[in-house]
Amino acid sequence: MTTQYLIIYLLAVGVIGVILLCTDKYKATHEKWRIKERTLHIWEWIGGIFLMLPTMYIIRHKNRKVAYNWISWAALVAWVAGLWYSFR
Image (cartoon, rainbow, N blue to C red; front, side, top):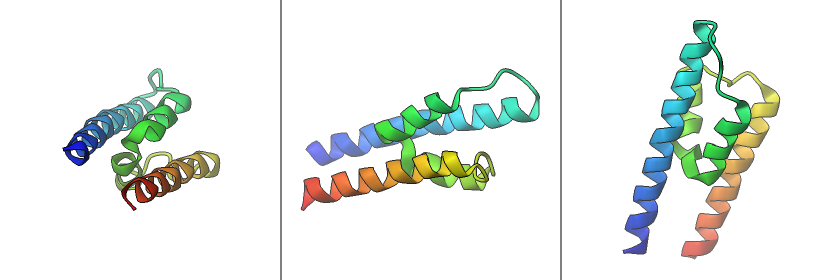
């Protein structure tokens, strides 16, 4: 039962993160007020990384910023390590 809740949580957070990422991409191309990188990173670190990272490369948004990528990949590594440790 706990695994089901975790999957639902990760999907919900991931979908919200993807919406934020796509909104930021739209705002960037239309020269509007942007979403802060800190906000995007927060959504990655609370679990949205699993959907946000692939989306980042699919829509080609923020994938060339090295500093942004380091933090994103660190979030992925932390989540994978945490899940591996939890389910081991």
